Length: 257
Image (cartoon, rainbow, N blue to C red):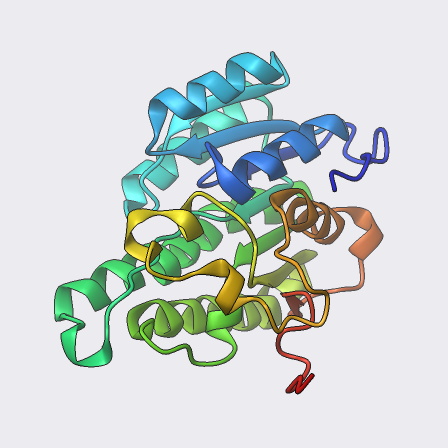
C-alpha cells in the first residue's frame, strides 16, 4: 500500500538519493518530493533517472553518479549545492546483489559487492559531511539489508558487504552526532524490487522464501520509502546509530505453523 505523504514535512530541505532511478530509490524520491523536498536523483541508469525526473518536475534533477567513484561523489555534491543548496539528507540506496554458493564466490564478486554496497556508503557519507556540518546538520540513511543482519545461504558477498554498510553507518553516527548529523541504516528483507526479481536471483521463488513471514506477504517499495522518509525527517531528530529491520517480522524468531 502506498501511504499518503504528510504535506510539507521537507519544505526547504534538499536530498541526494543514490540508486534513485528505480526500486526503493525511486519510491523514496517520489515520497520526498511529495513532502516538499528538492531532490537530486543519482544513478548509473541515466535513461531511467532522467525519465523519473521528467515525471516529477522541477523539484527534482538527475545527475549520473557511480557510487564507487570519489570524483563522481564530489561532482554530485557540488551539483546539488549549485542547483538547490547544500544537502540536508543523503539516502545511500545504491546496491548490487550477487547470488553465488560460497565455494563459487570469487574475489571479484566479493570486491564488487563491497565496493558498491559498503564503500559506496562510505564515500557518500564522507562527501556530504562537510557541507552538512557547515549547514548545521543533516540526516543520512544507508540501505543495508536483513542479509546484513543474519547470514543467508548463497549470498556471502552480499551479506558481508551489507553488514559492513550497517557498521559504517553506526561508526559514522558516533563521530558525526556532535555536528548534528544523524546516521541510521534500514534493513529491508522481502521487499519486491527490480533487483530482487533480477536474473541473478531468478532462481529464488518468493512464494517459498517468504511463505513463513509472520505478515504472510512480501513488502513493497512504498513501505520502505515511508520508513526512510521518517528517518530522514525531523520526526526522527533523536534517532541515530539505529538499525531498522523492514522484513514483515521475518527475523523476529522461528514460526512453526
